[in-house]
Picture 1 (cartoon, one colour):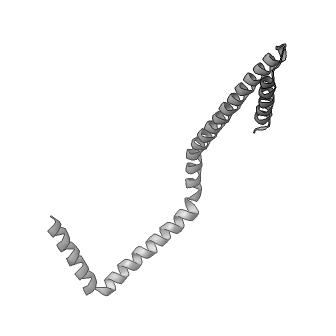
Picture 2 (picture 1 turned 60 degrees about the vertical axis):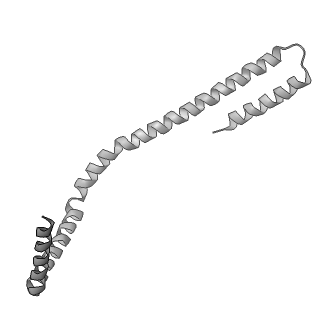
Picture 3 (picture 1 turned 90 degrees about the horizontal axis):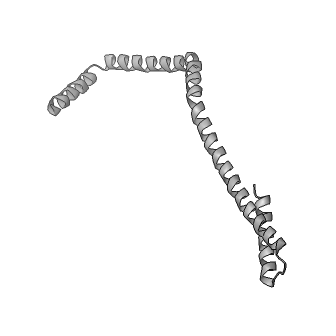
Length: 121
């Protein structure tokens, strides 16, 4: 089977070499036809293609933006949870009667963490 294909290719190549004028005509016709098809596609089918591609791309863009929004909401939720825990611990220290030096260090650390979380965007 491969031999038959190889023989057909060799025969076609030989015919192309034996008939240069016909080969030139065929190649020129193919070149002109492909150029015309390309020009027709650009000017007449461009609007058709753009409507198809934009309608098919919209769900992808919306899906990506929805995922981004969900990630940002999760980040905000986690940050608010951390801030809530810090506030509860600070309230605990506020209600505590006697503070030790380690308590003041912990309070300072919590205030720094709270300010970092609050200023984070």
